[in-house]
Length: 115
Length: 112
View: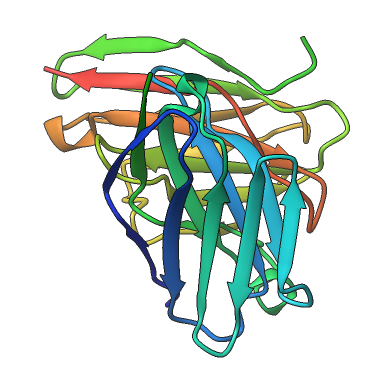
């Protein structure tokens, strides 16, 4: 079945710097890739997602890139702020190839933005 | 609040007891998912419903676990004869078919 690997497990950056989190997936049929942010004790919240017919997507300071050939996708956060500190999860879904549309998650990246 | 809600938020139980969790999805969402999240890991898929029909169950879902969504609205997840290995955060998510999954705040289960 599908497997998603996420790196790094922890990431510490200075406020204002950029942060990059990378994920790889195993099933080439995967076609939907969301990113969730989870603050301590709170629910996972979708911050951005990308589908396999798109190579890059941006939303203000957040961008996601997808390389289908290499089967990896990355989250880029620019001009980081202390409130960006959280655990970030990538996920993949087979979409219409698997009628459940269930999400397979990576193991998470704990991002710390130092003021 | 129109988001996904879960009850209770925390549950402490003794090994061998039964527990039941409830999830109320976003009202117009016909898909409802259950995931389990252990410390330091991403959520793992357990099962999902489309309306009232349970269409898939993960191998993670042992015979001690049962889920229902009787009227296609709220769902319950019951764990019988709890074990310490069942301690985790149980997350519910809802969506329209093929759309974004919105998560609830989770129920944190501690089995003593």
